Structures are given as C-alpha cells and as structure tokens.
Image 1 (spheres, rainbow, N blue to C red):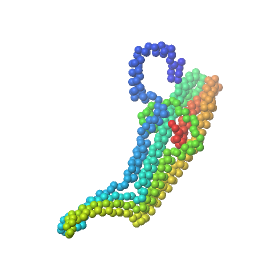
Image 2: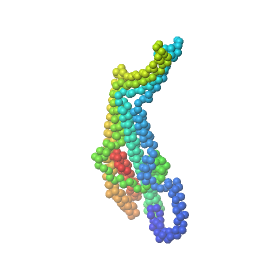
Image 3: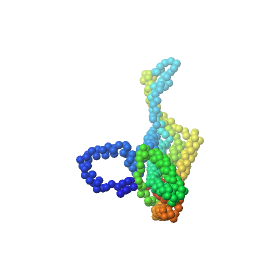
Image 4: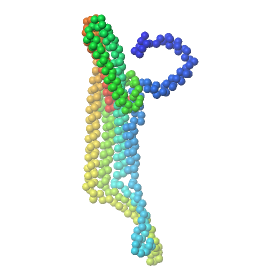
Length: 439
C-alpha cells in the first residue's frame, strides 16, 4: 500500500519488531531526548499559529517601550505633585566696610532663613491628574500595540501557510504533468499524436517549474515578514491546519465593542489630559506665593549695657499675574486649542476604525460566500471537468490543449480555494483586532 508520503508499513511486522525493544528502551529514550533537545530537531517541529502568537507577544519591544513611558509619566506625576524644594538662605547683613566689625553697628547680623514656594491655586493636583491621564494614554497605546502585533503575526503566519500549501499543491501536480508529457511523447513516437501536443505538454511543465520558483520566492519573503515578529522560529515549517475561524459576531455588537478599542481609549485619555491642561492654564491666572522665615544673630551691647536682641523675620512673597495678563490669556488659548485638536483626533480615529470595521465585515461575508461556492460546486466541477477532458483525449475524442487547460484550471482552482481560506482567516484577524475577540 502507498500513502501520499510513500509505502505504507506492514503493521504486523512492526508489532513483531517492537517486542524486541524492551531491553534497549532506556537507550532509545536517551537518544530521543537528545534529538528533541537539539536545535536542528527543533527546526522540524511544526510552528502552530498559537505558538507564533505567544512568541510574538512575549517581551515585544514596542509594547515594552510604551509601558516604560507610562511608568515614567506616573513617576513624574509624583514629582509634580510635591511642593518645590525649600530654599536655604545664609547671609551677613549690614556689615560696615569703612571701619568697625561685626559688633560695631547695631544693624549688623548673621542671618539664616528658609523660603518655601507654593504654586498657584490647585496647580499641583491638576498636574498630577494630567500626568496620570498621559500615563493612561501610553498604557492604552501599549494595549493597541499588542493587538496590532497579534494581528500582524497572524497575517504573516497565514501568508507562510498559503505559500507552503501552494508549493505543496504545485509539487504534487508536477509528477502528473510529467507523466502526461511522457505519455504524449510516446504516442507521438508511434504516430498517434502530433508534435504540438508534445510541445504543449513540455511548455506547461516548464511553466510549473517557473511557478515553483516564484512560489519559493514568495515563501521566503513571507517567512522574512513573520521573522520580524517571532525571530528565527519563522524558518520552521508551519502547521498544516488553519484555525477554525468560521464565525464572527454581528456587525452591531462589534460596533459597540469598537468603542472600547484601546486606540479610542488612548484618544479619550489624551482629551482628558488636555482638559487638565486647560484647568492648569486657568490656575496660572491665580497668584503663586512664597513664605520666608529667617533668624538673625547680633553681637554687641546697647548704650544701656544690655545685649543686642536677635531678629526673627517672616515674609510672604505674592506673584502679580495681572501684570502678565497677555501671556496668561495666550497660554489658556493654546491649551484650549490643544484640547480641540485632541477631540478632533479622537473623532478621526473613531471614523477610521468604524470605516475599517464595516469594510472588513463586508469582505468577510463575501469571502465566506465564495468559500461556500467553491466547496459546494466549483472544486467538484473543476475536478470532473479535468477527468472528462482526459477521458475524451484518451479515446481520441478530445483535444490535448483542452486536457492541459482543464488540469491547469483544476490546479489553479485548488490554489484559489486555499487563498480564499487564508484571506478569510486574515480578515478574521483584522476583525478580532477591531472587535477585541478573545484568543
């Protein structure tokens, strides 16, 4: 018996041979373990889509960068929420330079003081809130990056699957066309067929070889694209089964889920951050102020013979924002424009995602309908047409060109069917990104 991979084994012989393996089972286990652990053996293990997804998402650099930015913004939020550092002032005041010393003049003193500034209004709490919203935006961008990486990995894996499957279909068909060319040459040798049939058979065989070269080029290209996401594992053969993605939710439910897309949540966070920026600009119209406390030490004696008293100074410094009203108003106007820009950007993202969802949903339905047509009618009709053309040719009732055309069409039909399966799976990957489908 033969399978598609070669002769089928004699299972009785296999069972008899297996009974003699008991004494060497330990050695075989060691050898098997060594093979499984070797890198070369690992390259032959089929790469499933789920494994490719896992490898792409583990320590993904783009996602890690965005998460680090979010953490940095949160740390800055801690800083802006604190009061400015107090200022220490040390000085020697009113020291006579013409004559005398530290105790000559009554106003001479050595002073040490502290100054603490206080930002205007609620600037600190607003700044903290703004940094938190900016950090939330980065976190949502990281989530969106994860979805995009997942979708890109799926599409790249599916491309590799398609080109491997196309290569297998053409390679499996080549021996048939080779046999057909051989038979035609034999019939031509005995005068039953003409030279044109031989040339046509050899031409189609050459075209198959050219097609294999192009498929191998595309397969290498698709593996390189997959390697961007999973590295060297892209060189492994992909698994021979497509994921079972034959159902999607309704368009209405996906449109509702789209409102929770991380790109939209990031845009919402940006709007909230710019709203906080407007509040901060409003607070800058209020005065900032600072508190000074100082202690001054004096030496010497009063005319009465008493020691000179030390000084304690307390002062308050208040800003005058109304003197810079133009800059305050310009700052507020700029903050309002930035908020308007953030709102417009959010609307643009919402429209873009909504349009992409509707277009991809329509594409999914069209691909599903075409797949149904292929699987219920076209594949069978194509195969029957090829077999009928060959029978007609063998009985001298058909033309050889019709035979070649029919079998080439049948091969193209099977490749097109695979392309439709892959296209629908890639469409599902896009819809999963937009609708937030669970893995």
